[in-house]
Amino acid sequence: MKRISALSLVLLLLLLCSTASAAERWHWIGSNETGLYYFSVDDIKYAPDRERGIDKNIIQFVTIHELSAEGVTALSDQMKRYNNNRIEWNRVSYIMNFEAINIRDRSLRTYTTIFFDEGRHILYKQYWRVSNNYSNWKEIHPSTINDLAYQHVITYARKHDRDMVKRQ
Image (cartoon, rainbow, N blue to C red; front, side):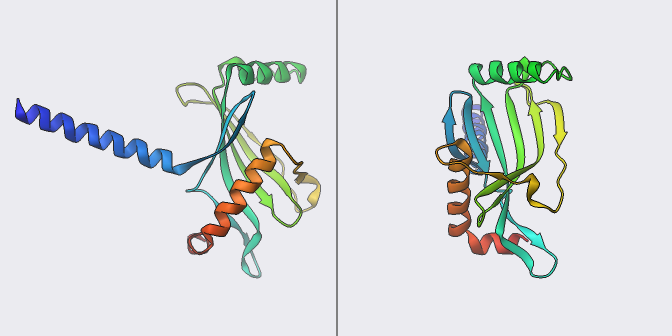
């Protein structure tokens, strides 16, 4: 009986540790009526630069948007307006974006968007065309979720600059 209790305790501690490390990976950005937003500290890095090695003006990162019921409805409605019937949009629970922030210009660009269902299965991937001109960069407007992401990401980058340089 003692062995079973000890084994149960060890398994519970392992579960708590894995949950804590997963929680440490995702930092909260903010929320709105469509859901909760997080960015991954494991995936944040400076953009590569052919001449200088890295470009500290461009920060690449990954976000997760955990959709609320209102967010699922808004996404489904938006896709119907675009006549996009590739998947059942009402099954989407999470949206993952691979993005970059241009600090100097206060702009954001998305490279890839992945839509997941509740079981974390990929429903659809969208690769966005990216060219070397600035047409792909979108201005970050004040008091938006992108503004909150900008603030959180650049604050994290400033605090963890040395670690981010080592990751390159």
